[in-house]
Image (cartoon, rainbow, N blue to C red; front, side, top):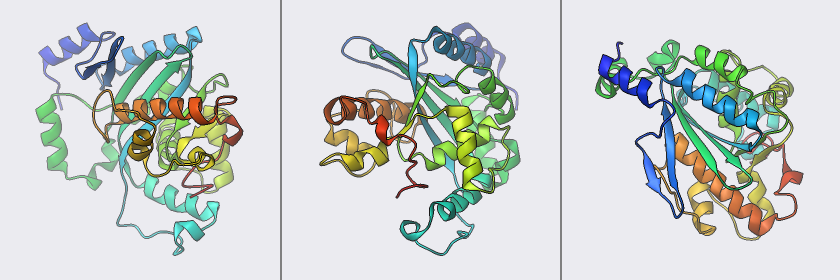
Length: 283
């Protein structure tokens, strides 16, 4: 599907500048950088530069996806009564046969500054899970090309964002986010059969400090529910975009974590609860 020449030229000229979806905050403009095939290489150069400078030492991840819901769980148990291995097998099956639509990434620094990206995917091999007509119409309307996940994997692995023990990763209900991220990091391969091997890949690519806000709120007095509910309880407003936009949700997750950390975990930011993935290890 060809991108119009004027659109391609606009992206080329604007790569490295702010993207259209912006919101004016108290002191600065918050902007989500919209990433497609035409500007993904340029945007990864910005990510590499930010990471290598060392200022942005926290990364918040969110994904938007479509699961293969017509597939039966490998275990008949309710997830609450299943083992971590059984939960992982269900997640693996649905992720291996699912589609990632978007990946949101927020890099944040100790001084509160943030950079936000929203990567847009529709893997060709998994198109049958969508209506082909719907996909073609969408991209005909937007005149933008989705990112090839294999190309994304190459850029990710050389970006400095992974294999980096100096970055703290933050998520909300991380099981599927991590499942799709690991597929993207491994050239869209099927996930490992065993949970121990999946966990090893997570540590290899993301390091040891992974904070799942959905799990950590268990150790507060009054926080519960989904991301929007927890954010509202903490007095956090969404400053850009809408729910179920990966870039916007990654930023909301970061703001939610930061407020929760300041109120409930001022000494260590909840790091003592790191490594527990909600949806796999706990539910």
